[in-house]
Length: 414
Ligand code: GCO
Image (cartoon, rainbow, N blue to C red; front, side, top):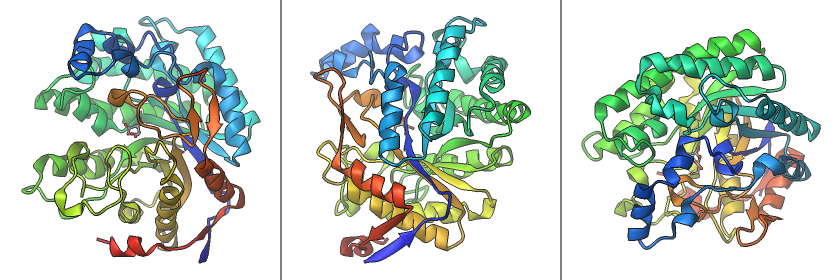
């Protein structure tokens, strides 16, 4: 049994995104796409009910944020990552909705009132329909529209936000939307993917300057970083490329415009691209989605960031675990490796679990349950705190963790 202390002032909390929780985002390209005949046809022919895959009112977070922030506070959290839905703020090109901005202001004030420092994401996969119709980030000249939105938000909320995150996981957005044809606009083009990626990098770097002009608060992105073991360009080229893009290509081109590094960590690439299990590692524990659980990979990812000499915040780490059987151990095992990285000199300053509540998991709809808090989808979206939330809450409240290293963990150190 060990008692692991975390650095003073460590940030503890959760992360969500606007689209996955707010509900009613009728001006977003995803909303339109979910309702499209093409998408519904695909679901129906797979024997699925399309309504289970429509975000609809999601968690109604847009209206119930106070309740959720109070819950976070009661679980001893001192920070939270939330998002702004661009399509809501600017439903028509150039028309910024003042009521919506007022609403977000109240949301930010409520977070502060509940003692939560705010990480605010400005783009998390979704676009306003009008922007998507202009072909979004496929065109360099469209970056200016994003920058105009960033400026509006920066001017308005420059003091209310504690940490800015411009984009969430740019390489996932690019590969799912423009290469694999899975997310809207479902393109499958290498050239478009490359162009969108270049434009996202440029949009981030230019947003950085705007944000810092209007706000003293640090800026970064939520990078989707993975650990890679026993995968090389010959054995699994696509997996390798995805890893290279996220961990090297994007990071190296944006790091000068990041005040910290935001790390989203879910798995390492013993799991093939798109979560396909590789036989040689089927011995690992898995989440409800079949993703292998590899907490030790997080230590390697964090150590690889040491060279940048910037503070690091874990902006996402979580597990789909409907019955809450593995979540407590999942969190503790990952924190154990975070702590190990800190001891080796990585300046990790916070950990945000994905997510506070169950929410809309993109292509998989409401099936996967990532929440510390369960949402009753049959009833009135009632919130019910899971046991693991209380256990995590103990760590958040004491800034330390009593930890029993598990034999299976060291056996799986590979
Ligand atoms: C992503 C996102 C989240 C997901 C989470 C769980 O990685 O796609 O940032 O939107 O919901 O990662 O899969």
